[in-house]
Image 1 (cartoon, rainbow, N blue to C red):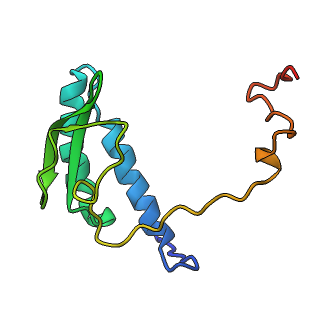
Image 2 (cartoon, rainbow, N blue to C red):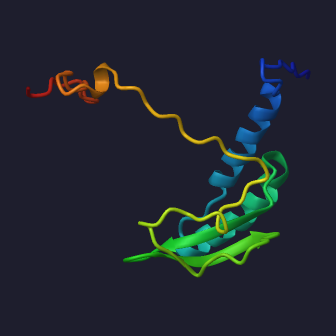
Image 3 (cartoon, one colour):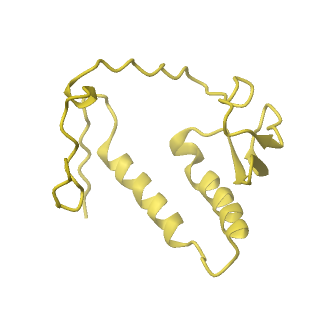
Length: 134
C-alpha cells in the first residue's frame, strides 16, 4: 500500500487534509444520539479537542448552550488563558478578551455592489427547480 502526497500552492498536504477529515468523520460517527444532547455535546467537545488539537493547533475550546436570551457556559477544555464569561449575549459581538487567536484574523472585505445586490436584479433561482413568481 502506498500513499501519494501532493502539495498545493499553499504548501499544505492533501494527505493531511484527508486524514483530518477521516478523524472528524470518526468523531461524528461515534456520537451516541441516544444520550441527552448535553451529554453528547460535552463528550464530543472532549473527544474533538483531544483528537483535533494538534492538527488544528487548538489551545482550548469552550461550549455554550443556547438559552432564551443568552448563551450559557457549559464547559471548557484545554489551556483556557482567560476565564470565559458565564453567559454571552447573542446581540453583542465577542470582545477581544473572549476571542483570542495566536495569529491575527483578517478583517472581512467590503463587498462591492454588483448585479446580485442591485434592486433591479432578478431573484435567485429556486433551489427546488420551480420558477419563482415575479
